[in-house]
Length: 483
Ligand code: GLC
Image 1 (tube, rainbow, N blue to C red):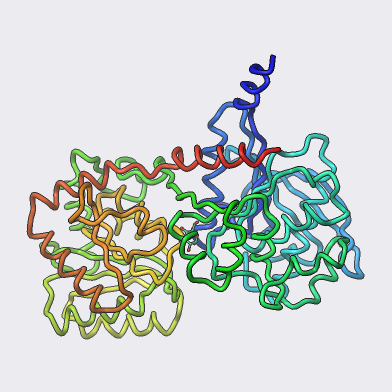
Image 2 (image 1 turned 90 degrees about the vertical axis):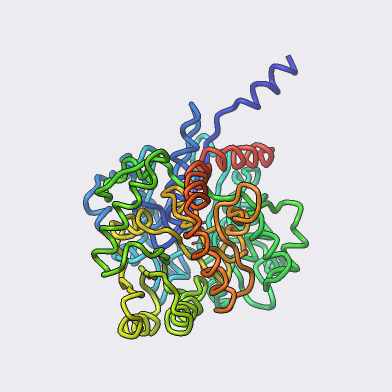
């Protein structure tokens, strides 16, 4: 009998609620959206599992063109006001999506960037828990993502408003530890009732800090790669806290959606290819992209795709590219695709004029072009200052493009250097243009060694960074957390 119960428990299906500000394809600003969009999809592939996503309402193309039904209506006492709340449901994604509309915040067309973001996210967190608290069957786990949902674990364990949620495990995942949600203390007036002697749980360095609160109160804390967890412990403004809580902390590497990212079927590509046809396939894509950007397709093509944010290191990269072209006369082409910091974008536009046809850029977000560039490039460079996981290196491998990465976070966990066994990329350590230049030099040497280059490409395409792997680890984490 006892054996039977244990057996049953091990195979129990689970209901998981994901709470997040972003979820692809509904609303996405960065990698957080990709991950939250993919996790429930792959988790639900196990018969009986039921993961859902709850996120704040955004007025955009997705919400305007998809059907939503009102699932729940309520009022939310919020400071001195009473706000109307509507929770809308949609079924188009293969899992249930719920969007929370709070009176006064319902006309937002963007995910972030409003003066009263802090209040909006607090209203979202409280309204969601109010709703879940009155479900007949409570979920097995509530999984929160980044600081916008950082107070949820505190409310679940310590607010008198949610006694039924005390025994529901809360998981908190950090996708970017640099955004911690430090806010002014007056937002606490909008919190659901709790004992004031618990106020210290909300602060770090005398400031209200949503991420620190989550790290203290969640049952389990994860980062999106094991190495990033180490970095947060060793060298971050929250290191001491991570040390204290280390028993419940673990890193789980993200995966990618292999169906969505497949050079054999990618609808954005004109020339499809597989691991067996990688040389010809990439050649055809390269000619197309080089034609567009006026590059010589005989030279190696090194690309950067992504946001122009301090984290991503485009500033240092542009310095290295400039030196490669103008000081070392490198026989390479460089392409930068992305958007962000306007000053950097202007600088790149100017650099085009002084780089003798070897450098070009596209400023803006363009999914189709990005896919074409993954398929066309020989190398993808990622000179990140820090990188909780990074997804572009996985996309690159999948498209037979060799990543050149700095050894931080998820980049260190996923890319083995060409000099080591099973290597399929190039690593560098320091964040300066000398180290990038050296990595580029190694790339150009490798490009000339046609045989080794071809083998590495095939090897890159055979790597497995699919979600299936990560989902196994999340499932185990949920099971271990369950009472
Ligand atoms: C953030 C991180 C990135 C990570 C992504 C998804 O955007 O900067 O490294 O891959 O979240 O977890």
